[in-house]
Length: 293
Picture: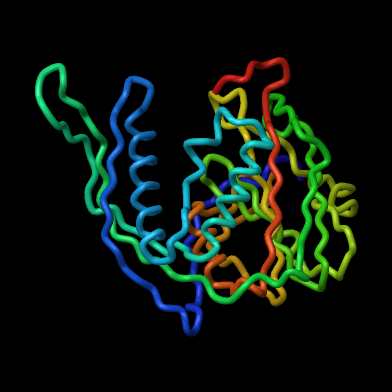
């Protein structure tokens, strides 16, 4: 089996946390339209702004999106940013949201007028539960900083991740790119993700790599470069990331995929003293290609 794990759309199911109280808020946000900003980019910025305002009203912290930052920054910059993203949103999560309306609005006339992209949404925000356990930690390392995605698919550099938890834990590994979340471990071939204390584990491990199950770098069509974030979430008990398992090509391992908001929702269901998160980031690019999109 070769190749990156195939993408699949999933529907998440999570049990509510006892004692936690959701709040539903309606928020609006707008961003000025400029020549450098696409309508999709404007929508994402306005959406993220509205969600950030909803979380701030409930818990007084910042939460921000990743998609608008994932193209130009270096792996270290994006890893630091995403680490702050996880930490800053730790006190509150957007469980779900619905966009009520969106579109371009204009204020003023003539040369002095300004166009904006406007989003109005309703969001359910959940305050987090408990405090982090300083003695419960997880570490994550990748074997290099830059990987090449040589065509055709399945010919890119092989990637190996290593992780370690400070106490017995279930470790779930995620790959994140362009606001899409992919569950790497557990998967259809390796369902066991329990780790002993202070032991390093590889993913994929040597047994699976000897069977030609490998994690290889790929890029979507039309892209020559992408920054990818990898997340290890250790939990003291088993907390499955539930979803629909989609099966793609015969040469790929079936996995669950979701949106970044779904990952936040799953984290919100785990008390802070029962989880630990580690972040790493890499650059994937075409061999001999530039640093463009």
